[in-house]
Image (cartoon, rainbow, N blue to C red; front, side, top):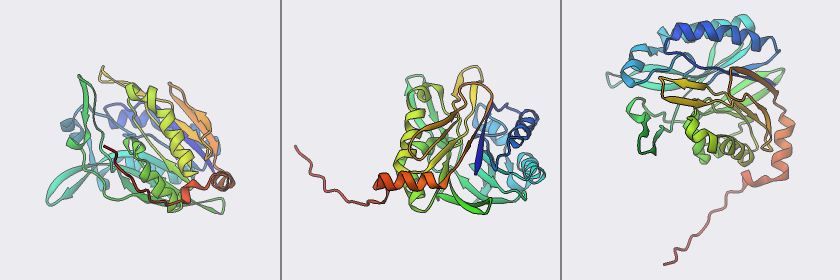
Length: 280
């Protein structure tokens, strides 16, 4: 299976972003790829909850979802929408979810995943984020089954901050994931120190391919995203790096390499329990 990551920057306006994104999807499709992956907040990004709530849509009304489903069908290609800010009623109250969608070649959504781990952090005295004040947390991990060139590939779905929770990735791998997607808008301040290391570690620990489409650039005159969309092998080798500008990266996913990596170091399948003695 050939996979592409498209790296770009979302605008605050959904239609404006789609106008920029659609030609990039067509360019990626020309590279004869089977799966095109887009980053988190794929078609718009707003500065606060109130603006996000105004621009978010219910699935049935989502312009982005409608357009991207049509493109997947027209181009005969699978598309992962890293996430769309999606509304849903819970107990008669309108709630917001950060939701990833996997669309097949027929333009059908075959799997969707709500981000589980919220980005609630305090990076510096003046820089903190409370994603849980905007979004509802997802409740379950998801694996999609995608048929490509006569073979089935299992795709574990995560979003951005999920990256820091290795047990999620391990569980996805133990349930058969061949590759794990990590669509992101990763902060530059943490990305420069953690992004490459964390993604390589998740690949090595699981023996999975890691496909991480990310956004780049500055937003709202203060927030900066790290870029560096990556495709990483099950051995932890960086196969492609999109660096820090608008870019499309492409790499092949070889299931044999998953078997080889896991046979060399079979740590994934060891489920040892450890007794810990606390010394005082």
